[in-house]
Amino acid sequence: MKKDKGIQRALQRKQPPVLPTNFAFRTLLRIEEEKRLRQQRIERRQFLTMLGTCALMLLSLVSAAVWFYGEALRQLFQKVMASLPDISGWSFYLPTVVALALLWKLDRLLKRKFSPTQPSPGNES
Image 1 (spheres, helix red, strand yellow):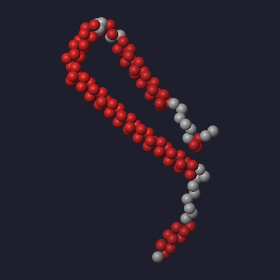
Image 2 (tube, rainbow, N blue to C red):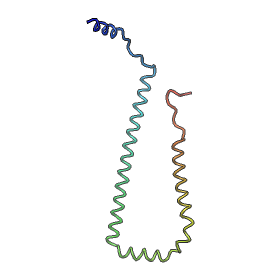
Image 3 (cartoon, one colour):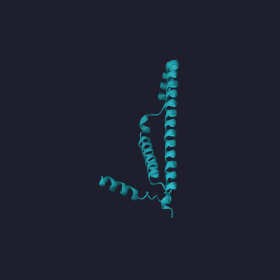
């Protein structure tokens, strides 16, 4: 019984938790950030759904064209390939195009990683 009274006294003496002065502001900022992130996820999901739908529509269009005009397309493709210059002349451009694509991707990655971000609420100077 003495232990119970000691625990009760300790609980009665316990002081309420002290919150920082900007607790409400920071909590609202976190809530807004969560809302923004949730909205970005929804938009990304919608974009990917739209992209997949467009890809399926394009695939069905190409399939229908091949189904209905397959022989004519094959003959047209053969004529176009016969009129093109030899492929060895284009071998210089392929590595250049691949290098440019890789450099563009690296540039985007580095810009995203090292771009200045908005200052956090506690670090304003």
